[in-house]
Image 1 (tube, rainbow, N blue to C red):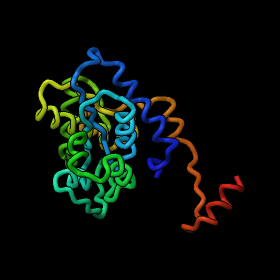
Image 2: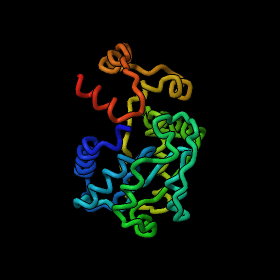
Image 3: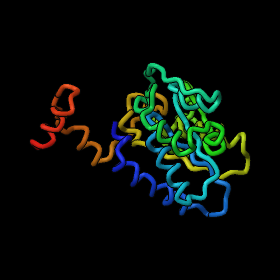
Length: 220
């Protein structure tokens, strides 16, 4: 998975600081909602907090693949088989980055709960959020970002007076088959994305073997 690569985690750290820097009140009590599947993005946020990011808490917002919210409730981490949802990139039943998250808190679930709250949402919840935000604000959420929005709503209901940041994950045009029926109109596809969607897909199949992977990488 891309999200376990430190070359992705490190730049993700910086956009947390970039988002916080845009707040009107830098002293605000800030919640950051992170749509989560393999939990790389949230891991980067926790690293940012260790580096001084002044946010109060993070929301681990998931679809029904909710092993981390369950852990935060029970203190027991129990991987499960993945369940397919409309927020497909978050369909992870055994997130690879959880061990990193746990290590940041010394494996102490109580300490993690002080910083991270969990929130899980169904596909119907997700469609409802897409519809509500579009109707109220004219903004089109993709399914993953909608889960983050729902997580922030739930967290702010328990912690009134906080300022919220939701990390958006993708352009809704990537998920037009899900989003367009909800908002009742077509989504304009940005030119750059259109080129990518029309591009040729190339893949090289190899066995799950480190020597084969090494040979392939060295041959490029």
